[in-house]
Length: 349
Ligand SMILES: *Cc1c(COP(=O)(O)O)cnc(C)c1O
Image (cartoon, rainbow, N blue to C red):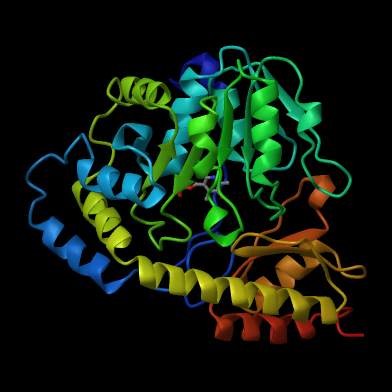
């Protein structure tokens, strides 16, 4: 017997990529393949000694340096328990006029719009998997991931700014989970465009997926309103160890940049090698590649790699069912991956 309210009975929750402790090459959830910086590990140890106290609800120790990193004021920055929590508040409280997002994008948008019974318009990507903002008419809130997942493709900031200018009364949310691997972020444009809100995460480029730390950058009013929701829910949603890790991560910018550059170089190498094997790849601006093979189905590649203890991500959505999404690991891991792909029947003809 279920005691869950009827309004939630129909929910189809988000399905995270498989997490495993067994020895596999894990290229399925876009985590950073490199360990967190040493100073993050040290900071976590020190913070562990303070755990008898509540965490600081102002999150000041991360908000200050993060604001400095982005060259904005602390009043322009909001912190949450992963960007998933930031997105939760956005879908909960900023979409009264409905929401529009692409048919192929981060799976949580659909889950949250369902959870909050939103008036949702799903707008198909173009044939080449790009987003055409001209199709986002009306007055609903727009949310796009830029670069988008799992396609890896990005839109130039100028295009998003022009759209925001044409629609001054609509909120435009730009999820920049992968922007550190791309050429551009919307953050420098925010003071001219108060209806754009950028959402970001420490999970990918900052090595902290397990710590759960996400943020939003935008106008003082937007940040105040986000805090209104957060402080009506759980003011301590970002825990003390995570705050310490976030602070230390911002002090280790050189290491973070060095790893990001390695990941970008490995991504370019991997795409070239895949193309030599007949794969078609999108022009990824992220820490994953999105590729398909003319003779071998995506599901087959996914299963054959899994049999060789390499996890990648495959989505059953018919529009992209022939693709696999492969997170960028270390160079050595990607060499192993390519070796394994060559052994799949039909690839290396
Ligand atoms: C990974 C990801 C997130 C979630 O990030 P967390 O901070 O780990 O919750 C949000 N949006 C997109 C597009 C992502 O790929």
